[in-house]
Length: 337
Image 1 (cartoon, rainbow, N blue to C red):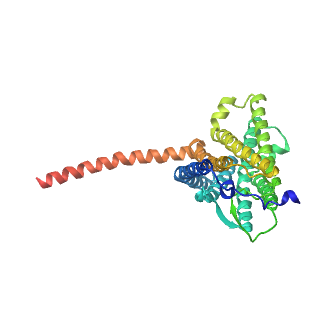
Image 2 (image 1 turned 90 degrees about the vertical axis):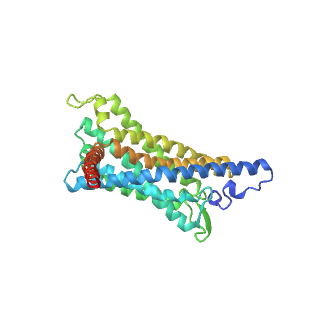
């Protein structure tokens, strides 16, 4: 149980006695950088992501009410909701370079719901890739039949996500729930097993499945009736762009998670530079949620078509309003004469 005793750990910027001017300057520089990164995220990415997410929800709900119910749209709707939840949880970074102060219990609850959104978006993305893969090759297997029932698949994803999130909540630690702590969504005071489980089930296994899907897509020969690989990629650009974006952003974040675990196992708190990079990786993770929603809005065909319709309506109204203003101006001039 000694490895589970995490009372010794703290953030470098909060604990080290800074004796030299160089150390103090390093802390100030680090905090200035993370503050600027946070402000850029809150000012640009959050509004863009939330607006895109709301537009996607409106379009999908409208299509659903008109009985245009496709399994891909249902999966992307679920993915959109997960990413909107992630964006709302990202408001915990507003206090950076400082940290949210709360009780151990409240931080564990926040971590549970954050992990639910994190795992959920990851596995729904894999499910979407698998659905497109099976749709292209159409094997007569039980898996192919299962993906044709998206509600069942989403139910399984939600169940698995809940179990993983609950496991992570336990691994945050079970002692001193009443104590006040500095809280991140992936708590610093969590046991090392927390980060290891998160890396394996939140990045390692999903990334392996994602790579396998792409290998099969490129290497396996499609049936004669199926469109070419290039046409297939052009038909679903949003799904493949999201997969690439998630992999890159989550790779950076998970590398930092593992690095933090290594520091814990060495029983060292690291440096202010380590803290800066970890905070930056966390914000990059949230930027990925915003970027994914923008990609769906502008590259997924049903959403893109609705956006183009709105733009066309605005273009039609502008000339019409301009023509109405011209006669009104002419009448005003003639009346004054």
